[in-house]
Picture (cartoon, rainbow over the protein chains, first blue to last red):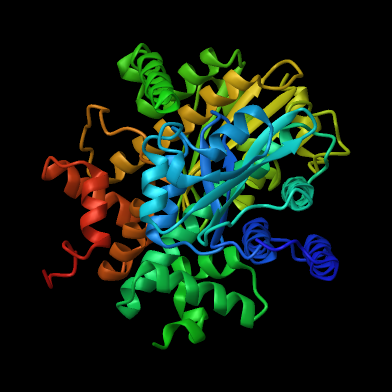
Length: 243
Length: 239
C-alpha cells in the first residue's frame, strides 16, 4: 500500500471533525470512517467492530457489506486480527493471510477464499479500555503498511472512539454503554431496512444497502433515520420506493 | 465460542431466577421481582408500549415501584420515557445529579419515594419497540459490569416473553437462544424486514410470525431466516 499523503489525510480529519459537529449519526460516522480508512491506504476493504457489554465483538460498519465480508467479521469473535487487537490493545499489522492458517485456522482460509491477501487490525482505545477494532483487508501482493502509516491508521481508529463518546457527557462512564447499546440497535434497524427494501424491489440485500446509503447521502439524511423510515413508513421516502 | 457459551449460561441463570418466583404472579411480574432480586434493586417495572407509542400493560415488583413507574407517565418525563424515545438504555446512577438528567419534576418525586437510582432498558428489536424495563434502587451508584450484563439478559428474556405473548400464548421451552445478537444474526433481521413487506404488517409482527412458524415447524429461527433471505420461503402465498 502507498504511503499516505498529507493532503488526503488532512481532508479526512476535517471531514471527521465536520461530521462530529452537527446532525451526528454514529453509524453514518463509522461507515464514513471505514470508507476513508479503506481508500487512504488503497485497501480492498475495511470494517469496524465494537465490543458489547459481554465483550462480544459486533460488526458495526464496513466499507462495503457483502455477505462474505460480513461473515469474516463475524468469525472474528472466535479468532482473528480484530480479536487479537481487542485483547492486546496493540495494532496487528502486515499479516500475510496465506501464511496465517496456523494462527487462525478458520479465519485465514476464509479470508483468502474471499480474495484477500493481507490483513491488519487497530484497537479502538478509550483511556485504559479497548472497546473494539478497525480492520483493514488488502488484496494485492505486497499490500503492506509502511511503518509511517501505522500511527496514521491508529489515529483514525482513535477518531472513531472520539465519535462514540460524542453525543453525551464524557464524564459519565455509563455514556459509553448507552451509546453502544443504541448503536447496536441502530445496526439491527439497518439490517431490517435492507431486508424490507430487498423485498420491495426484488434485489439483493447488498444492493439494498447500497441504495439506502446512496439515498441518505444524496438527500443529506442520516443513515439510521432513513433505515428507520424504510421499516416504519416507506411511503415517506418516495425516492426509495421507485425501482 | 466462550462468550456465546457464557451468554447461554447467563440466560439459563436468569430464566431460573424467574421460574423460582411464585407462578400465580404472572410472567411479567415474576420477571420484575426476579430482576430486582438479582440486581440488588429495591424494585423493577415493565411498561409495554404499543406500536404508536401509547402505553399498554404495566407490571411492577411492588407498590412503590408501581407508583414510581406510573409517575413518569403522569409527568411525561423520566428515564423510561427517554429510553423509549432514544432507543437506548438510560443509566441514571444518581437521580440527584440534576445537571445530567433533565427530569426536574420526576427526579425529586421519585426520590421522595425513596428511589435514588433508575436504570431503564428499552425492550426492542431494531425498529420494533415493545416497551421498557426499569430497575429502581434505593441507593446511589452504578451497576457493575456483571450487573449490566444480567440486566441486559433480563431485557432480552423479557423481549422474548413479550413476543411469545403476542403469539397467542404459545409456551416455549427456552432453547431458542441468543436471537438478538446483531453480528451473528444479520440474516434474522433482514428476513424480518422481508416478511414485514410480504405480509404488510409491522416489523414487530413479522418477528412474531417468524417465531410462530419456526415453532410450529420445529425449526431453528435462524434456519427459517436464512430460507427467507435466500428466497426459498415466503409468506405471501407465492411459494
